[in-house]
Length: 86
Image 1 (cartoon, rainbow, N blue to C red):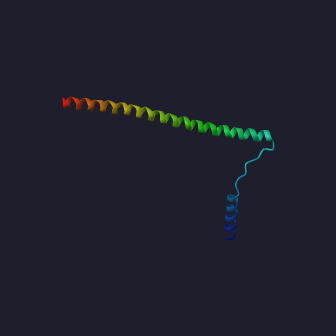
Image 2: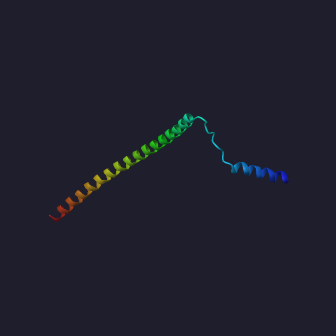
Image 3: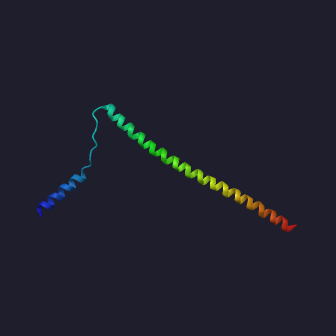
């Protein structure tokens, strides 16, 4: 029983300590790692923005078509109303 308690405590201690990334001793290496990380993050952001822009363009296209349909319907109703009164 004592062994199980000690093993549990050791496991909890190992989880509590976050894994520290290896820090390079060379400034150039550290900077290149940071720039590489930034580049990967920027690429992900750019991909997300492109996908979002494509989605917005499709929505705008659908809205424009809908607006044209409503305009044609309004003109048709106006013509029918005018023809009915004359």
